[in-house]
Length: 175
Image (cartoon, rainbow, N blue to C red; front, side, top):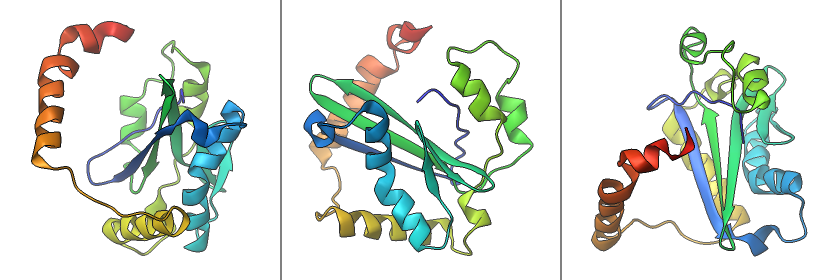
């Protein structure tokens, strides 16, 4: 990735895909973004939203950016994360994203300057219904089942949060 997305609780939709790198074997880095977001673009189009993939990592409509993706690849696996705006307060973006500040990635500045095109602008559906539709589209393309984390998995996640991810050494490692 490299761009900036404003994520507000209850007003954004995010998803992450975890897969072996072999899932994108033979694809360039750029092609892998289109492939891993292809299901959601097809689903949004099926719902009447004129969505399309814009290389490298954006999902857009004719009115602006719907969402953006990022990838990390480590030890033979990849995580692909996409964030999409469902609703957005247009006055909040310029207050939180400092366009004039020097940034790590020039793409982030260009991306933040573009108009956000929230999904609610295109659909008369509540956010929960859209999430259900997206889940159904995903399962139609990639047969499987949804599940929940068991107590042991949740306990392990909480331990990692406390022992690793909340520590200043972890948080400050990229500054």
